Length: 471
Image (tube, rainbow, N blue to C red):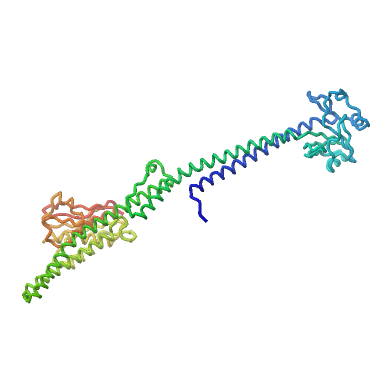
């Protein structure tokens, strides 16, 4: 079964809720009006029956029952009281009921209604009061009030309900029309509300379908309402826009990384191919190289292979840490000085002849110890590459850095030092992938820090990371 769109469901739900509210209000209004009208009818019925009262009390036409009046009303023919003796005098709808169920009529009236068992019991006992709705012999709906006059006799006042029924029918028609108009208005308002609420969701759906169909992450989204509103739909739009922006940025960085890696790999691969083809041509021509020269070529090829291996290693670390997510490692407390000691031990094993001067203060941050150790190793490799003397390693004042005694860089070059695959013109012949300091910058960003490259007093450079907070 095909499910309705969410916009139609919101409109239908709004219409149903408003319809229920209008129907309940209409029923309440109709019931309250009917109860009020019936109370007024009952009051008028009671005014007609003044037991042992007087005539024309408070200016109202009433019928006062006394023993003499009831005796005369039940005579055959009945004797009218003075206020009803005139030909044009109005005859109130009143009759007497005896305990045996027979009725005595006032004036020239016909029997109004047939007393029921409950009304006969009131007449017989002379106690109680009964109000009921019934129908006359002519089919007219009436309301009947029965009051006792004395034991064995009760008086009944009867009034037609035609006016009440007509009023209630008119009211029901008006309330029905109002309900219909209210439901139509609610459906229209529900459609407008659904359009307002579902519009952003439909735009998000269209954007997601566009991305799925085209693989294009640069999808413009209207999130202007996010500036002054924090409702759920606006937050969803802003979050989707931020997600798409970050995904697009991550893809651009990946594409740039692949392009840069392809450019950097081209040189060592070309050099390897040239050397290997040269050796093969010499062997095929029957003029092989002397052993010493062949050894030097083999060493050059081995160096190029090692350079390729280093480049692949750096690329794998860069790709694994590329973007905003980083490695899938939960951050935890990291003792920076201990991480630096482990990195120095690794560097020392690579070059046992070099000396490291350590100045380490205890410092703790929250992060990934493996990634941080990799960054420090890259700092040490960079320092060893450009310095023949000892390398100073310092952890102090929220900073960790390696200081070399090399030629240093100009301010313009220092600003580019942390770019991927960037190397100074004078360093093109040195081994390296150009990714070491880029990885340092990436690890620094993941730990809320910033990389720096500055001149060292007495010559050389200080390259490291400055952390933004202490834990």
